[in-house]
Image 1 (cartoon, helix red, strand yellow):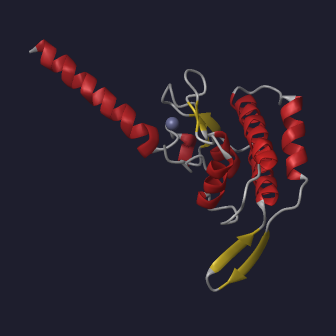
Image 2 (image 1 turned 30 degrees about the vertical axis):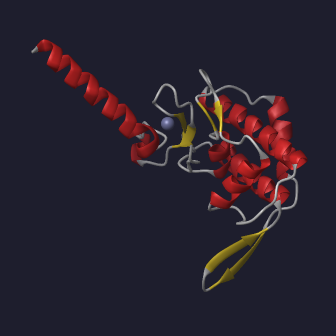
Image 3 (image 1 turned 60 degrees about the vertical axis):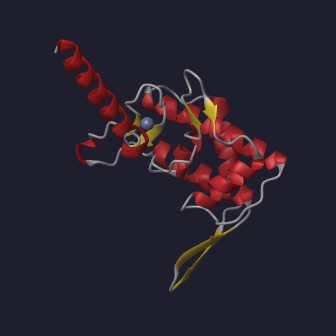
Length: 182
Ligand SMILES: [Zn+2]
């Protein structure tokens, strides 16, 4: 399965690397190499990092802590203290360096710096009282995303990931119903 960057925030996208959390969770980060690929594909992080096993484990605990805090926000309850500690500690680490040129912004740093950057952007969105965090409307998805649409009317984490799938399923169900009726 491909990684999706549809949540509007790298920390939420990291949390979304476990899909179908409630029923049959699928973990897209099975090994350090998957994490290296995820960081490379994420636009807001350094292009090349290497992951050792210890840092991979830290990334997974940052991911689970971020998911828990985002869910706390969605359910409008207090943040889980243990998860706050993990996210805050990760955010306190060194951050990537950035450089401007005609080619645009270039970011460099190792995996720890990348995780620190992820934790910081997670904190920024979780602390923002105006940020509208939602869980995707497709039951099995469980991805939490930032709804920036006007009037916060978005229902799906992404059209390709979920919206079109739900619409296609509804269309098939309607067709089945009309065929049976005939
Ligand atoms: Zn979804």
